[in-house]
Amino acid sequence: MEKKIIFWVVSLSLVAVALAILLPGGRTVDPNPRLPWDITINASNEVEVFDLTLNHSRLADARDVFQEQGEINMFIAESGAPSLEAYFERVFLSGLRADIILVLKAETGQLQGLFNRGSRISRTSESVHKVALSGEDQLVAANLPIELINYIPAANLDESLILNRFGEPSERISEGESGMTHWIYPNKGLSIGVNPEGKELIQYMPLERIPSFVAHISHNQDETAR
Image 1 (cartoon, rainbow, N blue to C red):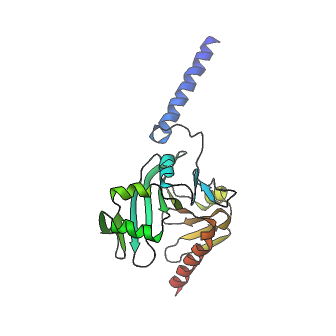
Image 2 (cartoon, rainbow, N blue to C red):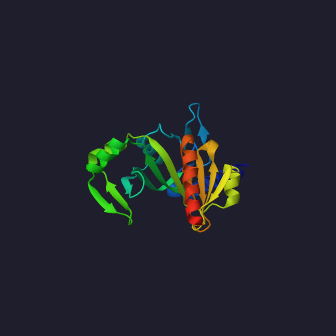
Image 3 (tube, rainbow, N blue to C red):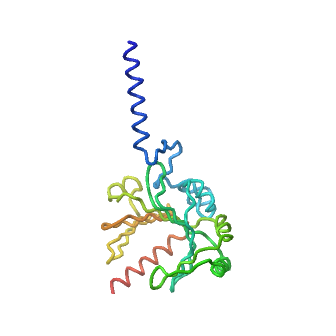
């Protein structure tokens, strides 16, 4: 009997060690899972995911959740409004790895000030400039609220997995040439870009942003079809 007890203790110890090795970066099992399909709409009609509330939680809150600082830059396109973004590479949440891009909410005047004080301006493409924030403005950005979350999983997601975890979308909009199809979940503030040739893009946005988002990608679809 004593030998059996010792055997089970040793076996359980080996299992525990194996799990520690298999979990990314030696991380322990998350007692508070933060999964991309766990989306809640709170009493104020705000989208909650990853323990973050859109238009309410700040960049500083996301840093606490992700345990990373991220890289903040402003992007200015020739067409469209400037965008202030925080990029987090290789974030592990509940054992799942992803790149995460947060779009921060700032007034037009704030964005202009950040641009004027930018420490470096570079070009990322023919039509997009990237502005690195000054050290002081990095601190300012940490207290800005998160408006949008772009989640790019490391693993490719097939349609059956998406349906199983997120459910049936209310609408599917194809982009045409790119091959990407946007699955729209208006009641969750969610769009999933299903890409047969590359990574999926999961986008979380305030509920009121869904109509304009759908109109934008539908317009792009019409332009591509011409």
